[in-house]
Length: 243
Image 1: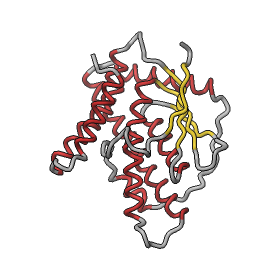
Image 2 (image 1 turned 180 degrees about the horizontal axis):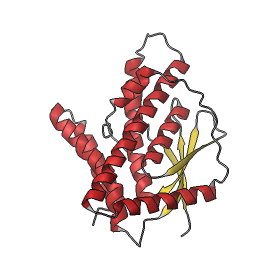
Image 3 (image 1 turned 90 degrees about the horizontal axis):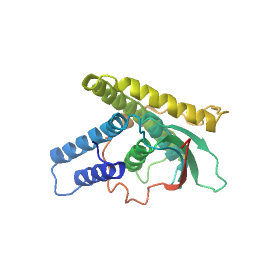
């Protein structure tokens, strides 16, 4: 039996913290990060295969993000949630500088998304500071476009990682692909019921090759103090679906 969601998330956070410890070598840090990435990918697979007939709770969770470039950060959370088995939608909020994402999915998948987002948000902040050091001539729009291209690359990395984990699980346990498909259909159906009239407008961001290239080098496990950083989004609560 796999660990409970909170226990697994705790293990992942500890691995990520170990990777950032000043006392470890670069090789040791990379091993810690690789293990964290592996656990993140396996986390959802193992939970869904062990709970057949008794799935974990499906919920709607509202996540409010109050950070610099909150809109880009919200889109990063959207991409992460969608890559990890959830469905998400960006929703409006009357508070300036705050963006909100509504996420529909199983609790263990949303938990994975929150851990991954906390890691990637920190990485993106560091990456954009390197790309636009203090004193360099740039506009807020330049930075936002660069960050959005970075998140697009990360979205592609996450999708590839999840596809690889799913293929490996199917090879080890035939029938896993069917369970994954059934969960995907259940999440999509629940999302469409809650948000029947979703429309997508044109992107307000421009693609930048430098941002995308930097995003391709992102570590899917690297972070500093996941869960303890003041960059962690404020969650506004959740409600169960069909229980």
